[in-house]
Image (cartoon, rainbow, N blue to C red):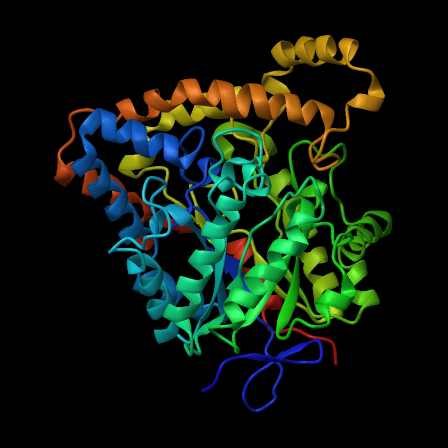
Length: 475
């Protein structure tokens, strides 16, 4: 067995046979996210808060047990049984280096990443290594563990140097491993200058290739992997073994959509046009495409009540129609996501587990206050935020409202991100951590076990759709 490579725009094995990499992202694991596991704010905040409540040693114990149970051999076997052949593994730089000791590899640095690479290899599953969080944060969102809404990665060369260093370490460690499908150097960058991303990609490409000439490199577009206009095709022609990654989320798949998706011809056309707009540059230049993220969120009966089934039927139809578009284009894809507490995952934590029972009221408050940015239902907070939005709009002329990363962040959306998803969420961090007060290791382990595959429910409708499309390609 040899490392996957490119033949034109196709990913192929050592026999020249095309390999469509199709699977999911393991979000919420080595890069924790608030909507995935139920905490408020950012990962670094809850880690600090839990250490304050139960002590650093027991806090580390809990998070280690969480990481252990979150993805085990049982998960890998289930994934393999579905016929999915690749998993994208997002990770946070903090697993490998410390901000107070930069560019020094932690002794345990590769512990968890090696574990999943090996578990998946045993089941014949490729992994794509996705640096989801870098020092300084490459975008202003929670999933880059950003302390603010400012992407300082683009403003400080020191942060960029550290990310290049980490990829040199990763390339050295995984060079020659045939179960690594490739490297995804930076998730969803948002470079407001629109020049520093291509320059950094050129740097990290050269750094990786100086060590590892073989593994594929998957490069996200700018502005949350949606914009490739800043890429120089002449530079890209010099890059060998590079696949270009879009993220194709449809607004129809989220609560803020202004219309329900029914899958009529007009809506299908909009879905297709949205995808084609994101990959237009790749098609014009005959370059390989990978859809690194997509997928709707799903209603939950405890919050959405009698509307749950209707909403989810609509979202599943949307997913089917998106996958039809990808099949027609013959591309590899990675749906978001594999596991969570019930909003989007292929499998999700049973509401009757210790973790879910412990946080039942807290999670309901999170939903009611819309403190998570991802797929929030803002109808419960409009009475409070509507006047704030109006006040700001009354004092900011329309021509000044499109601050980057507009239009992905709308004017109203930006106000919510700063005031709810950062400010309000920050006040709720200690409340989350206080749920663990007084707990000893045995109880912490039992709570962490809530995330094990045995304690999860399968989202059967979603998984069936993925199985139906896992290996489909046009004749």
